[in-house]
Image 1 (cartoon, rainbow over the protein chains, first blue to last red):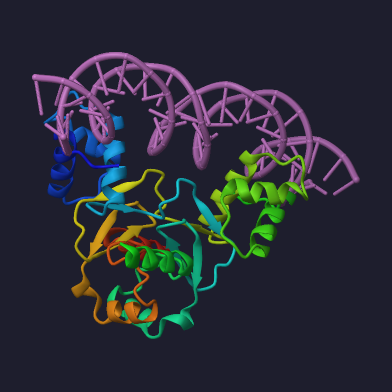
Image 2 (image 1 turned 30 degrees about the vertical axis):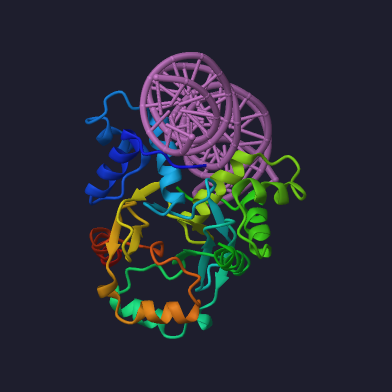
Length: 135
Length: 135
DNA sequence: ATTAATTTAAGAATCATTATCAAAACACAG
DNA sequence: CTGTGTTTTGATAATGATTCTTAAATTAAT
């Protein structure tokens, strides 16, 4: 699928870049509507989707629609795969001195149990690498 | 509101602790249903809510129902406030050598733009601290 | 300009989550 | 234990964010 350059798409990116906050789709919709009063909310959603897929903008959060839970409240982290959505545990031992530095830099404001990373799980990371070599 | 110890609540915690994955509410519902066939999905949701509020279990993700977006794709991080939901930028400069260490530990699998922390924003952190002193 | 592919607007549909409410389970004082 | 007030449950309805559908409009590539 080729990406066309439409007025709507351009305004959406443009307004999102201008904002210093991290708006939800409908918040951005309200902003964009000032320039394009006839744009629909669906168009905003559709474009945020393709734009984040292509890397032009960021989508924050775990990337899954559903919330998920963990019964293990001991100190550990999570890597949420951007590709397949898998949630992988990262144990403190895997992280060297990162924790101590985070603690000192953010002065205890980080909840020990809820640091979430987003990236690729091992399986998808190798898939991505393989695809990169092919193209 | 006092927390009663109900069979349902105990089984929910118990099964969640036994699972090594990070289930969604309905996935956990299916597991719990094997022990309590008459439990309702609403009960699972309600309990996951109060249990994560009391710290007995973890709720993964940004904690907001809505997805949010960022037009700035430069390398930076986000702190999502567990208390008010505010999303705060954390710039690489604020983090000392943390990034380099993360890069080496996770071998480039972390997407540079999407590391999300969860904790308290400055405002809520001071509120929490104040409340702690009062009690 | 012609034509094929993509995108749009509007609204309907989906589906995760939350709210409602009467009945059941629980806590606790006596 | 037993009554009484509180909390929780199950069933279901309601909500609300997101996705889907469709015909018409726009865009890209001849």
